[in-house]
Length: 216
Ligand code: ADP
Ligand code: NI
Image (cartoon, rainbow, N blue to C red; front, side):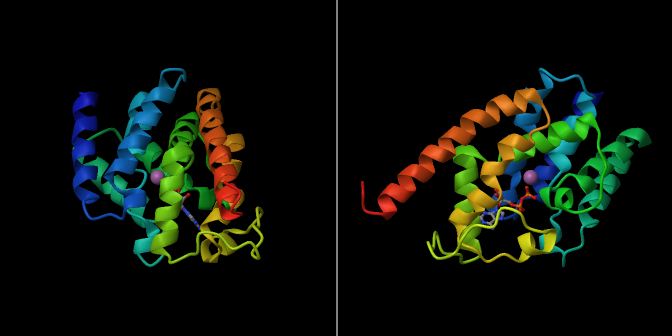
């Protein structure tokens, strides 16, 4: 039964992510999974593939494995094979995980399916809005970035390498990535949700700069 497989996968992911940092912990995965299910209500796609890929998309982060970008897809394949699910499902989920991240989107590798687009939207939704703001400052704190520095201009168009190596203040990340995400959504359902979250970030930034200037 597919619902058993999903429950089993959720348990595996939850256990694997027990010690993960908060940007990519089980709760991030659970939010992405919920977002994906919400998008599935208005999208015609293979539900099993979407749910499994949402659950497994951050199973192993290359950042913590010496930049090995194959660790995630391979871990997902190994787990799915152990469950006995059909090879075409294993292959599709593996491909989604391999090609989904924003970073590989900036690079030259290309793969696409409706299922991948839905999971990608679900993941991107978790990078914007109130949660997105919280995640950005958590990441910035982890990397010891300043909150904001008016002398460092944001650079919205960066190569994959520049993006990876950037040491800019966290506020710049809004202009370099977070505010661009609403126009990168693949599905109309995600575009609608993103619009509200985007507006919230704009209001947040307005408040931030007002307070920064001592105007509030
Ligand atoms: P993804 O999981 O989508 O590939 P990342 O690993 O790049 O994304 O980022 C995880 C979280 O940390 C996201 O919410 C993202 O916006 C945030 N983040 C990534 N890079 C930065 C940065 N330079 N400054 C602030 N937040 C960042
Ligand atoms: Ni993610």
